[in-house]
Length: 140
Image (cartoon, rainbow, N blue to C red; front, side):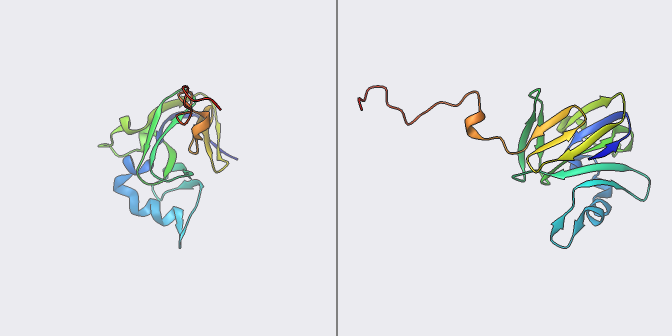
């Protein structure tokens, strides 16, 4: 686990908010064919955390039902003051952390302080799950 400093952060796919610095982002986080997870610092001092999702692109939800669309196969966090001025913050969520917070991933759940985003939800855990193969009219 690594800590980030208290503040107001954009949480979501960082490709949406660091577009003007995407080349530098990739140089820091990609090593050959491996994408690295963790906390990184850009040349201008911008600190961000990033973690790959279990299944790449898609839309994931946190424990409060907030959505996180993903187009670069990752979810990260960066202080709002450090995002591109033209960035659309609505493509993720803005969270204020009152104190320093842990950031980590177990390969399935990505955690930023008290925000946990499950990137490998199983169908059986879905509250809307129904057994569609069951035929109520048949007798076994």
